[in-house]
Length: 58
Image (cartoon, rainbow, N blue to C red; front, side):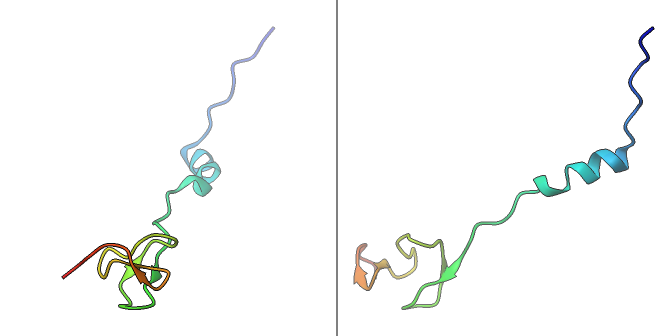
């Protein structure tokens, strides 16, 4: 005869899911203004990408 599955305690369940936590976005400083920005994207502060101005800013 089949047996019911055993209850999984909250501690064991949460330990199993410990590596599923979200991480913040990777940020690197802009080489021109040192404002944190995402890698491989235009800097929202100064508008530069790879040493040239892509977006005109004041």
